[in-house]
Length: 414
Image (tube, rainbow, N blue to C red; front, side, top):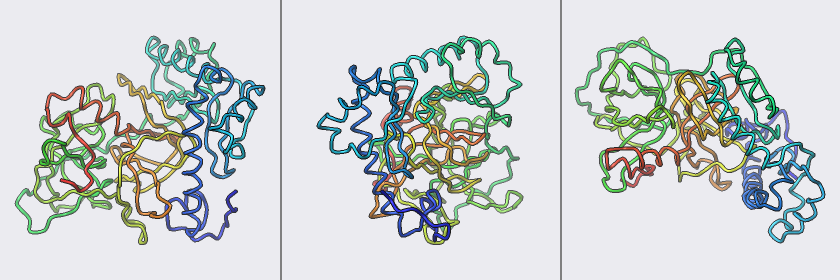
């Protein structure tokens, strides 16, 4: 069990702030979280087997209790589970609580509610399986939206319902285009993941990418809804953090959008970097923090567990962290239907769209991170991301530009 933390803790690292602990304890806590994730990675597939899927209702990690909570519908199956040789060494890390919905029921309910959301034209909401609630959770942005037909249809599935009663989702900040000086500069600027992008809308750079077949040109991935529908080329420019939006100095040219995902599902676009005034980076910006100004991306990875830490970097709110709330989220907004979302409770606002979503994985190197995807929206205490796996899969299947079908995360190996 981890030691309790002090209200007087020295907190510089983002995880120290998130977990409310001293900087010197971050490595120990991160190592313990990684330990719980490893156990959860063993446990989850077993719970989905036929002999257990109707008896247990999913898991989530509670770093503060130091346990994996196992939602339990049938306690008579607990001893059978604990006796398994794969699970037995970790019995003390599992905490079984009474639950109403089994995994099989949750999967069925999620499928039915997702189908009904399309059939009944549900408006402005998130749908996710939240293991902490052991239920399908619906987050509506505005109770004044007419969703009565949808709500009546889903009553038999008894979802948990919340209303945000605020703006439906942070959008890119729309601003007038200024004249830009594209003349060649003597000094090149490093563009970090999380820096600002401007094409008449203001968003954030998610990550640099390259083709496996062609090392040049390089590309930047950001949110698809950052597209400027009034500009055919959608030329993008670099905007550093804390840029004076009323400034008259010129911005650095990056290049045009060359791919935009159909129906914004997944929600991303690709910028081809033709400008010569910036150079690539595989670091995340956190320059508000004197001790941890940048975090180095070492790889990309899937998010596997609920309840674990997750962070993002973005132009507006900079570097923020929270916890994973769901892994199969759906967002419905007007005509858009975005699925397979990572749902979190980290803080984000308009202008953060497209920024990198990451987590820390090395207790030995607290400056290293893995990339999970890009931030694509949020509001009311939630923020959602599309995974890098989903983005690359879409490019492989849908891009007519061959070199985009083979994009990989740029890690300085161009």
